[in-house]
Image (cartoon, rainbow, N blue to C red):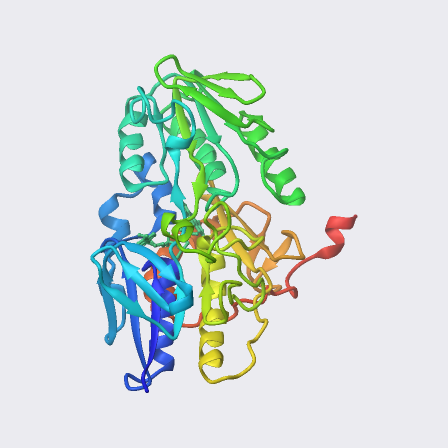
Length: 415
Ligand SMILES: Cc1cc2nc3c(=O)[nH]c(=O)nc-3n(C[C@H](O)[C@H](O)[C@H](O)COP(=O)(O)OP(=O)(O)OC[C@H]3O[C@@H](n4cnc5c(N)ncnc54)[C@H](O)[C@@H]3O)c2cc1C
């Protein structure tokens, strides 16, 4: 009998998984369904460039269904809930999708309304986010007119997707105002709930150094509790105040609401408890998850989703064949960090190894933890790779779910 595979979410993880599984199963072996609420696939790393006029939404958004291989059924609908006990998904149009295997890939939901005052008066006038296509466009218009004052970039709380994107925004803002020759009139502040610029100590030190070099003030352990969008005040829970003329916020993130409505599927924040190595969830043996939707202790990033996707697809095949799952994912994450002036830094790490200097993927490759033009070109080229290799589910030689060690220099760190 044909197996039913239902994939919730047609973003990075859902699309890639559907395409990988379509290659692995003939039509008469498995029916593959993808559910997403809309038909607009956003290349999210491109949102970083929109506020600075370096990219337009028309360059980073494509029809979702067109990214799926022939023979995959696309449902444009909101997921209402999952009935784990019955192996069924309920959609908001009333349709019920039974499954043999379920893959959860519904990412995160932004919750700006959870921060008092943030979406009140001043929202999208003085307080913005570039984490949504609309927000990125509105911020672009505001930056165009901004030629003096105090800009605060604030991460409300962790976890967030792409933890380096707000830093990249600050670096690019420095470049942008220098290009416009008004940098001396613009004060840039980076406020984070972390105790440093980033989560991993070595990279954190390197990134804090870059902020200092560029004259961007770093404010740490700042837990934003309240925003006065008209008065231009960001207040932390411990009652510190940061004045701003323009606020760039990375709002609170949570899991998809249907996860909370589906008994046994998620945790208190709506993330899905998932095995760190096999990507099978704790909800049921036939439920797998990947990407931002999981509770895994690694970055919420497209690269992570990509590496997880390779292991997950293999394990879905194994599960349906009654074979043991492969514990093939090691937490591998890989991020280009745009630093302005056509340069970028690259970091590569996993559950056990923090970002190290050296080269990626091997001794001759892209420099790690060091600014370079090559990394910037890598970041720009990645959009092509995304649409033409990653989403279609093709393997990228030398870049996979196991972090490569052979180009890395351990001794430099301990020196
Ligand atoms: C500004 C920005 C910059 C970034 N830069 C980078 C970068 O440089 N490198 C990097 O690796 N990563 C980057 N990322 C992160 C990366 O885009 C995400 O980690 C990745 O897209 C996660 O994939 P996903 O499949 O888990 O979620 P998504 O790609 O977000 O897909 C989730 C899908 O689920 C759908 N969905 C959710 N709930 C429902 C529901 N109830 N019903 C129906 N559909 C639903 C959504 O519509 C969405 O299409 C960036 C993100 C942002 C916002």
